[in-house]
Image (cartoon, rainbow, N blue to C red; front, side, top):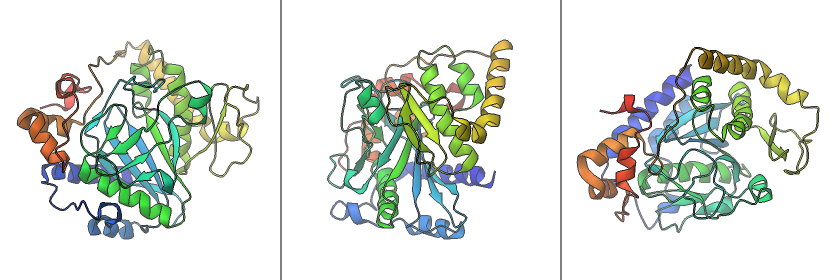
Length: 336
């Protein structure tokens, strides 16, 4: 609970920074700029160091990116949540080049996937298509987490946001982490969100993703990732015997994984069934194109697309499809 509260406080602090004029950023040394001193101090107060490993979690519907960091206990805790300025497409995986979909799945980023020369300030490549996506024939390339507020299948975090995220990833890799895991989800995988989206064609895929989500939630360790049955196979961190052929049938014995998450999975399944039986609204989202965190949407309403582009990009990269961003608030209850 402490880290959930701390994460909310950190998110609020970053949202306040959305009014930044980007004056603290440097284009010449952008790839080697240090992690901000305030963030380093926060790490130290939580028994973390800049060199400790990280896990990245992305939530489309909520338009948020989280950085989790391993502390001295060996478990991962939420360090900071970042509001996302823009993602494109709709909820659901990316399957083909040009579909404007931002990917959903499990990815692994190494040092060679950091791009210090990105046209969107800084970026790192997610590695789409991963082994599962390639086996399923999905196409596309260069799906990034980057700066500015423009997306055509990527996650745009603003120049200021990506500068900090990039530095956190760089220092973890420099500290000895061979690669960091990125978990990209359509939404927070709660029983309420699963119930709302139960009639979506991607529901079975999302149930598969939820197994990895639950394993991380229970153990606070990034799950090991395998592939079988045209989906992901998850095991506890360090598992060595997971299936590796995405198109082969899954083995019958998954008791190791089931033992860790069965209670949570069964509880959530029961909640979903109860919510549906009680008439809980099955709300399918209507999209013009992707989403934007409510804080950035408020800035877009107040200052227009040109004003927001100046606040989110040193080069004033245009906001992608601003009218669509304003048309799709996803959660109207959060709007002013």
